[in-house]
Amino acid sequence: MSTFFGFDERNAQGFIENKIVCLPHMPNGRNDVHAIVSPIRRHDVVFIKSTSPPSRLHIKAVGLVQSEFPTGAGREVCLPVDWLWQGEKVLENLDEVLALSGNAVYEEHNIQAQRELIDLLPKKYQLPPQCEWPIAA
Image (cartoon, rainbow, N blue to C red; front, side):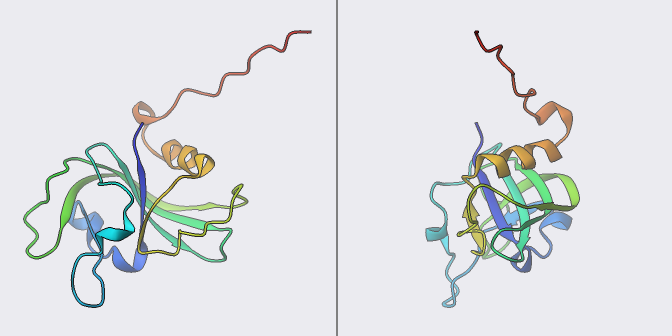
């Protein structure tokens, strides 16, 4: 299973055009890698998001990381991404408050949000429908 990482729209300018995702910077100019729980790997799902109230998550783009090796983007630490979906999808009424979604980059753990993100991808990346097991009487 892939890991899901959300990137704030304000920090994502040029990501789609350049087919990359770059790690954010701290005020001192260093890369802010402490915001990421685990390293981003090939085939991880990345998405560009914005948040309104803490219970809403606006998805702007979803892509798959193509390599865990940075691209030649100067001082930036950027990974190549195949952006597979772009648009506007609002996720509401998620089971938990989106406490981390206001960060510049965060790892998405909410299963409902993950399923919604996967459903935006082309069919070959989607999960099979949920099984409804017959209940024994």
